[in-house]
Amino acid sequence: MKSKLFSGFVEHTRFQPMRHEFRYRLYVYGFDLDELTGLDQKLPLFGYNRFRPVSLHDADYLDARPGSIKEKLISFLASDGSDAPVSSVFLITSARYFNYAFNPVSFYYCVNNQGNIVRMAAEVNNTFGERHLYLPKQKDGDTGMGKPYYATKAFHVSPFNNLEGEYEFSFSSLNDDLDIKIKLVREGSEVFAARLQGKPLPLTAANQLKLVLRHPAIPYLTKPRIIMEAARLYFQKHMKYHPKPEPVSPMTIKRTG
Image (cartoon, rainbow, N blue to C red):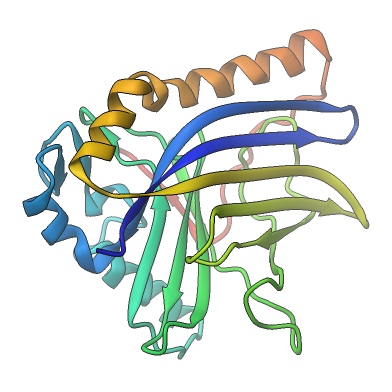
């Protein structure tokens, strides 16, 4: 099995117009999407498209079209003009926990038959019931693992940031510790940075149970922590509030259910 767990931290740092930072412990899953049916059969706590203490559902990702997460993602890549041959997809995400999950961001590593990363994707959810799929690209002549990916900001997440700027993504190799970095750059200055780090663990029933018992509340804390940090920015630091605009990008998906 290539799928695994990552136990680590998420951290955010806001540089402008004033500094604000936080760091929280969490764990995430790294799913090889071709292994989901086998994981459902192998792990007593895990279910694929069915209720279990921990589960993953195709309907929780991308849009509402029928098909698996992998099939839907490949369709999005094709609509973006990509002809890169994708053999497997590795998804970094938080699974449902007793049927609840909120994923601020999930990451897709798209791999060809030779084991090389051919595309990356980032699926971002906000607290307004919307999600957006970023398909960042590397600059011409600056390709390969370790080189940054770029995408123009096009989705409202924080009410303390407008839609201006460009994201710079850095992704660790699938064979290393998890280390994903995102920078928001505006007019040449770094405005915001986020980092997801984790030590890999085999995705076994024992490791899964250990993390569930050690951190039983973590899956439920993400959204309250977002609200708490927003309150600190607004009431303590008096940050300017930007009302949410109506989404205009075709890559933004608005959930009604």
